[in-house]
Image (cartoon, rainbow, N blue to C red):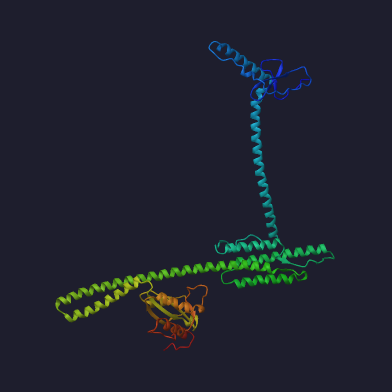
Length: 467
């Protein structure tokens, strides 16, 4: 049996029949027998050993050829040792080690990715199980109107999360815990559980239906439907004390209110946009009227100037003076038009009512920049109301915007429409408006307290049509 060569010992590079110690960087003089002993004991090299590799002769022109032959012989001998000891496979082993190391790194990365996929799959499974539990009691994912609202979205998410948590925590519905069925407590618990699930499913379906059908202005009706559903469940589950918990019912009501609030805000935005378009149309009409009036006055001014020149040339002093007076009137009117065009706050404030449409104690307070303010009043009494408006006050103000705002503020608590402030109707009598006008702007030249309401009075037979 061949004795294995101890680590660090190698066959002598000079071909001697013993082993020589290689310290990792050079051959030393330490040796031991290569064969003959069953268990040769390696001798540890001692300090002070000399390196035989250092005993090299200096190279010169005289020994170069011989030295080259010696070196070639050394190379051949070393190659023979490599072939005999199998050292030629070291490079292959290194390559195989590198490949295996890369495979280990790749497999470890794949393991990390698979662990992540497993974690995600477990999370999805838990979520799916949770969704299945919610759906089993009628709590489905559906489009809520407030989902697209910037102001209401966060509150909606909070409420919906609380609703789901209440279902998961079994706090959405409550019932007795000591009911027996066929003298069996287990069957009693199953009966209570099944009935609770069925009733909660019915309640959630009604709550979802209320959210989907609620509109701006009918929240009380939708809320009453949900109250009725909860009351019916309490009556039908009376035998097992079954009812929807107050906490869960409040959450579903809040969800319903958010839907109604969203519809209300949408309606307000649409109404505000409609009012803005109406204001722009009114402004354009006023501008066109002022432009047309200015062109008309400039034409009259030119005509009078030409006539004045002719009269002065003919020596008609009296006629020339009359034309100068007319020229002053036209110039004054032209200056007034320019002032109205430049001052966008100037205009006419009006106080009107429509007894037949809104009753005797309702007035509309507004302002217009139209050159003929009655055109605006007539437009307000178009086909949208059954009767024409009666005018109580109509006066010009340099700052009509401020006068209108003060009147609106004074009667703000009497607004007919408390949602849309652009609706300028107020529960007030013309006499109350007159008192306020006298306090705010001083003397009011013309004001009519009693409405004529001819069309309305004739229609109800309180006024003789022949008069």
